[in-house]
Length: 190
Image (cartoon, rainbow, N blue to C red; front, top):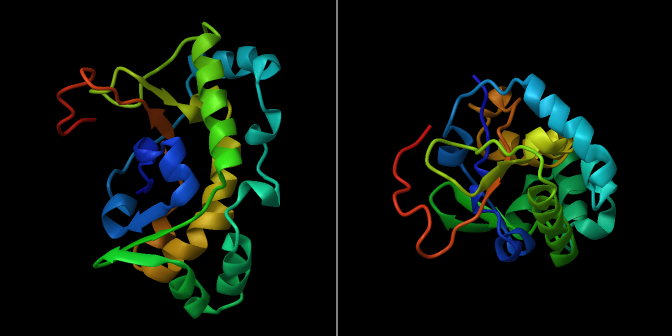
């Protein structure tokens, strides 16, 4: 199976503040994420229109990460689990949050999403119930987000959830927009 972290909660405010990890979100969905021909066409057409091309590369600059995060990650990878627990906050049983991105990164990411939406290229919605979302894998961000998952999220998943992190090998990454009066019935969806 393939586990993913639901990125639907990514807003500029949350992105800049904390990423939340829980066994529930890690195991929330099992899905294959093959890229369709339509997505490949959209990725190719969007490439010259990208607002921030660096977002599509897997090696993001240190200034995009929250202060202290990269030091914590380095210590965690070296085997110092206490560095993570000192950096993170336990929100509830087996639910942890920690700062991951800076406001600058969040603003660039959201600007990119808005730029794509304004490009006139096709938008496939992330699930059956959201009419205002965008699958960021399908605009060319799959490789960069795979690197984020492998380099930054996997070490935390291996620490917190060793029994499921071996299946942490794919993602369905997307953004959704919520506004009062829109998408009123967000119940169980596929």
